[in-house]
Each structure stands twice: as structure tokens, then as C-alpha cells.
Image 1 (tube, one colour):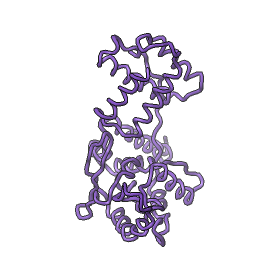
Image 2 (image 1 turned 45 degrees about the vertical axis):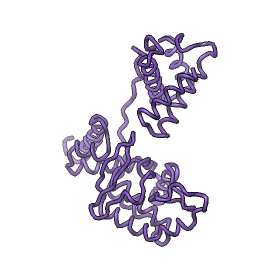
Image 3 (image 1 turned 45 degrees about the horizontal axis):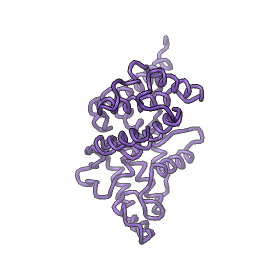
Image 4 (image 1 turned 90 degrees about the vertical axis):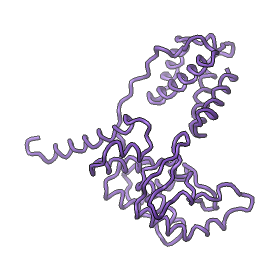
Length: 298
């Protein structure tokens, strides 16, 4: 089993060019499935019943439906690969339905909340300037956190008002960025050398990273999450959001203002329009709420 998993991971990393974060997720899901199997079970002995038993095992462990669906999707990709490469004659996941998921509308901030959030960091010191630039950039571009942490200083076009973003599967796209965000980045860049001077001499990689930590290294996804949480708690004890909420807020505000759904798809870097269409449900729900509260005979 481990040999087949290794072949599949090489395929995902080399041919499909998936990110390290995605590869780690696949590795974990396949590792859990491998542990579930008896040591004597070979890949050719895995059938539809084996997959159903595994899904029942996950449900018995109170694993969330969305997580079960993700793990099943991972197995589907794995066994399709094995069939395509000739290691298996048939796909044991064929005909197995994913658990039905309840559709959750994405959380987003209203204009007043997002304004308070981006203005929360102090501009008296370099880390505050950095945090202001991070929050402004996330809201101004709608980019993913993984895209933000991979940004280099040279990817900003201050004259054209755009960023060169490396998206999923390392696909590049140009994303417009607003003047407020550019202004915040300029202020941060003036003080950024202070962070570079704290860099240890033996740390040579990521020297071009735009957003640096306190020791001059590239920020991580976890660091961005902590930064957003810090300022959310400053403006409200009731809000519970993640950095991704700013991406939802970006898309929702554009759609509310009349932006074309296809344009929003391009800005977000979505491959399929169906992924972007969830924001139409958000705006429809908002309109219904306004109607119910405002119409005298609603």
C-alpha cells in the first residue's frame, strides 16, 4: 500500500503541481486509510465493501460530514490514478455517494466592520504598519492567505495598481489592488528594513518576501491567522472570523455593488463559476433579510 501511495504523491507533486499544503492533506488522508486496513490486505483486495466499512468507521468516530466527503474524494483520486496506471482493474469507489452536506453561506463583514478592522493596527511601529498592509491587501484583492504569504516585494506594480499572484497549482494571475492598500504597503516598505536587519545571517531563503515576521523571515499561514484574530478581538468580542472571511467580504461587497460574476471569478482565481456562485446566495439572503425587516406586509 505504501508503495502505491508514494507513486500517487509523486504524481500529485510533479505532474499536477499541487501545493505542499494540499500534498500534506492527501498524505494524511491516505495514511489514515492505510492504518484502517489490515496489514495483510493488498490494494487488489480493496473493494466497494472495504470503502463503505471505512466510511462507517469515520462516521462512528464522529468525524464531520464535510471531512468524510474530503477523505472520500481523496480515495477517489487515488484509485482513479491506480486504474489509469494499470495497477487496478476496477475502481472500488465507483458508485459510492458522498455524504450529503448542508450548504453554509460564507461569513462576511459589513463595510463598517471591515473599516474598523483594517484601521485597528497602530502605525507607530513597523509591525503595526505590516499588519495594516496585510489587512488592507486581503480585503482589497480577495486573495487567499497562501497567496498572500508567498508574495514577494517585486510582485507589486505600484504604477499599474496590480499584483502578480501565484494561485492554486502555481497558476499566475494579475489582480488589481486599491490605492488604500498600496498606500499601506508603501508605508510598511519604508520601515521593512528594520525587520530585515533582525534576520539571522544563516537565513538566506525568502529574502524577497513582502511580509516578514519579527525575525525577518517570511510569515506563515498560521501567523496571518493570528494577526487577523488579534485585531478582530480588538474591534469586537462577538466576531469569530478567519482570514478567509476577508476573501468572502471582498467578493460579497463587489457583487452587492453590481460587479459581474464572471469578473469576480477571475479576481478570486476560481477555476469553475459554480464556486463563485455561492456569493449570489449570500446577496440574495441579505436582500431577503432587508425585505422582511423593511416591507410593511412582508
